[in-house]
Length: 478
Ligand code: NI
Image 1 (tube, rainbow, N blue to C red):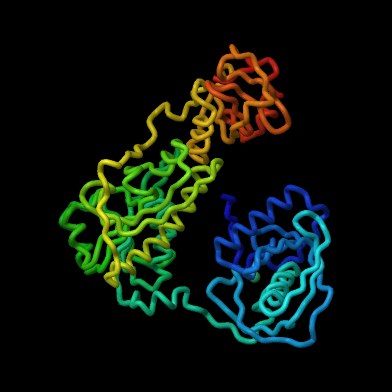
Image 2 (spheres, protein in one colour):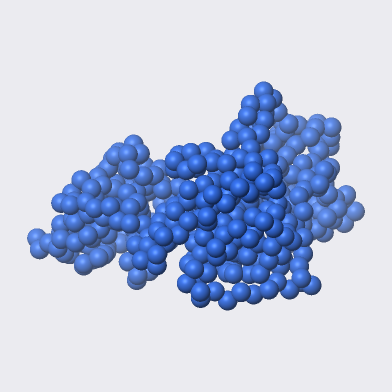
């Protein structure tokens, strides 16, 4: 799974700049094109220009249903005089469409992903997409050419299901929970109250910091409630006033007493980032990566007094890439969980949900990290070490020592055994070879490439640079 890039919107300056031509189609350009395609697909778009993801280069990806086009330095060869006026939208102008007159047929010349000359002839939607994306490269947006622009309800469909008549209390705290709150509000559900953890002291100065959910709720103009506990009669009374149809919970971080679970008219639903009954508990995402799971997903469950043990309402699986980190997987699951949550609310509300009890015997636990778990054990198999490193990225980072120096290890790569001859009695942790991209290190089983490290008090650096500055070191980690 490739990373999904942020799409710049509305008045981002990069959208208004004339993009630079690409000098050579190299691996970096190919990687950018691949990331753009992934980003476009995950946003369900038909075209994406590099400036939209903050890259001011003349490249676009387009897929109108016949497979992707990667176009580098595209230029019009011809444009038909005959035109067509239709509605179009843009990922950089979410929530709006406009009527734009475009040529009915165009021909574009470009370099392909392999750096070869290609010509694309398009008619109708493909012609429109080509014009729209090429405009982006000159800093032009569809709103500049549109004769009328209207706001589209993000979820017309859901609203016709009667979402606007539903009232939901949202409970959540960290960044993971923010997409769920956004999606609830966007779907048209009435969210009059957000419950989140109280502000906590942060950093050396012990500044009180609001949770990410509190910050977002304030931006959305929603009332925020931050009780130390939900078990007090005052807290329960406050929730009762809302007369909620649903309570939606995502990583709130506090137990809900039975009285609160009983409160909503329909259900108290929880978003959990694993395929339950596996990985119950407070740290499912890191634990799944540490275990090298290739399948993950989100579960929407009916909350019960036993943690993460309630009946399943809805599950959505995803594949996990063998190099994916905790950071990206959690982000993906938070967005997937947000979609699943509103879908689950719709299922429950319309009475079309199939409630499935969890099989307790198949359950596993996902506890928080214990002290010392971040330290790399070089006696372990290479695959386990790799899984630890990516499970602890971007926080808190896995740790090893080089001589007396402590360093974090941010990026590794499992290597095939062939091509790295080493003496069988070299101790695990021994650095077998250093090249431009990595230090090859012997493990308890197999070898691993260490790509990026960060010694205490320094910024992250390539393993090669780290070792070059420490020639007198022990040639061994751990
Ligand atoms: Ni666009």
